[in-house]
Length: 263
Image 1 (cartoon, rainbow, N blue to C red):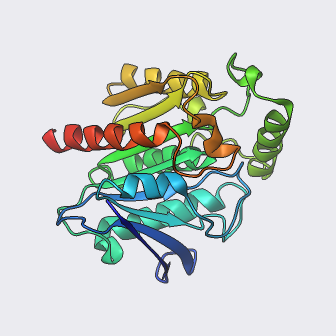
Image 2 (image 1 turned 45 degrees about the vertical axis):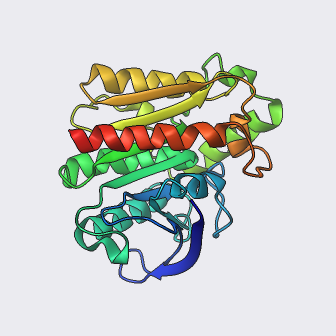
Image 3 (image 1 turned 180 degrees about the vertical axis):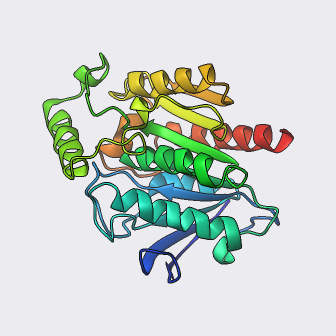
């Protein structure tokens, strides 16, 4: 499905005006899913650069809003508060995106997956009935960076993530909203779609979090792409939309939406 892309500003969210890029399937139907999606970038990326994963998901007929969540600052808790404020606004008014029948989800890749998981935790604590699902695509969740798969990352990527964690937590706070892998209370969270790949440095922490969600009674749809699909390029390379994962992600997202709609 062709995707329309437009830039807008959410003027009424608590931190102040936040630029947002909206990817919308040109033929999206009434009740189309609304996904608040957080881009990656090792906790530091700002601005509204193109987000291939958001466009890929929008091609299923979804409405995907990608905010510049670091606009108010990139040290915790500022990005989390921006993300949660936008979620709260969408939960109440949809802000012109979708309608009251639209499922509302949060999601993201890499550090954006961290923000999405943190927003889902806070939504559980404050708006438990408003969040319908979370889409965690290789989320960066563990500040200890000690998993076996993480050790397979190249030295440049490991250094980038290490510097990113140091920056994000530089206010001296390691709250569960900041590092969801350390959260001891996961029950009651929204259903989760969790994706990684066999050659992904973030595979182990992604699967570890998925397992803990399942143990806590959270509904989880999990998929590990085979090696060689280009998946690690979502946070380290140049994407052109022709990677093999681009044929798999839409099917996984649509299956997830169908599952949460049934429940």
